[in-house]
Amino acid sequence: MNAIPPKKLFIRTYGCQMNVYDSERMTEALTGAGYEAVDAPEDADLVLLNTCHIREKAAEKVYSELGRIRKLADEKAEQGGTMRVGVTGCVAQAEGEEIVRRQPLVDLVVGPQAYHRLPAMLDALDEGKGAQIVTDFPTEDKFEALPQRARRTSPSAFLSVQEGCDKFCAFCVVPYTRGAEFSRPVVQVIAEAQRLAESGVREVTLLGQNVNAYHGEGKGGTWSLARLIREVAGVEGIDRIRYTTSHPNDMDDDLIAAHAEVQELMPYLHLPVQSGSDRILKAMNRKHTADSYLRLIDRIRATRPDIAMSGDFIVGFPGETDADFDETLALMDAVGYAHAFSFKYSPRPGTPASGAEQVPEAVKEERLARLNEVLRVHQTRFQESCIGRTMPVLFEKVGREPGQLIGRSPYLQPVHAYVPESALQQIVPVRIDAGFPNSLSGTPVGALSSEHA
Ligand code: 5AD
Ligand code: SF4
Image (tube, rainbow, N blue to C red):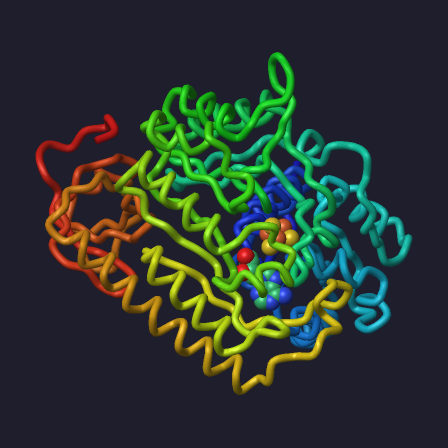
């Protein structure tokens, strides 16, 4: 008897780590429904665009990508095949039916809370039921309904613990596309961490749009992120924990203390501030000030002196003056970021700031360039400060040069070193010899060990 050959699935992922995680889970769900993942859309049977809506012209980019896919679908049709096309993620949530109206090629529009429904939606297509659109927030738990995670090849994995956001920063579309804050129950998170560890994962990054607001149901009531982290640290095989993204107002004392007490928790914290001007922070509805942010960082550094900070900045928010922008640069100097992301403000339809008068594009461009120059100086300073230090590196993959492996430092920097392949998936102490803009290189120190350094 001949087995039915698997159908080919291609997913293109845009945007944040949450989307990367979701794409993995969708792949797993569809593998169970007879698909196998491929690396190119050309002759795929199902193409999914897992989209991001956070910044500029997101929807327009999706429509132009769909135009390109239409050509591939037409070619496939000429050869007698069919290509199903779906849009998932935040643009799907925001645009809904409009997507099918503008690009009738699209068969599936699926919001981020409904991915577990994909196999059933595909069945409905097979039955000739026409385009399937689900952008509501179903009551069932998609995480429970999605199949278990497949075997991993990388020792580092994302683990989604929280979704949505209740903060309503005036620029941000997340509370509308991802909905209200939802935290996965502790048992689910721990079970997933255990399964990941059993399949060779040693580092988990706990994901959430506002992850430090985590408040999942656990033994005895509601658990905080700090408590969850302590529990994940107890999972055998998990040696490194990270979490992202956090809001300054949700950094409670226990979470700060965990940075000193939980040795698996990496000394690297992504804590977006967006602006250094109190006037702009207020207009952004951030509910913190530049000073309260700086005092928070002082407390974190007093607890964990070697912590490296990362952040997000928006330039050109409506009403931002030169003086406001100078305050952002001053805040950056006061913190000294190891790494940061910088964005020009982009009005997101439906968000409170979107109707306000815009800062001229040329001014945004000029501020972004200045901010990036400051960041470059900070980042170089941080890279150079690593030279001569010995740090534990988790080796993830082979490098371009023969004999070379690439791993990650505690500070997320890629580290290149000549180490035997047996070091893959291991944490090895490496003395850093050189720093580059986006990576380090070094020499392993002492015997290779599977223990954490
Ligand atoms: N314009 C520019 N940047 C934005 N971000 C979120 N919304 C916008 C917007 N409308 C940035 C913020 C956030 C990061 C994920 O994206 O800095 O922290
Ligand atoms: Fe958006 Fe983050 Fe603000 Fe939530 S806290 S509204 S996700 S920027």
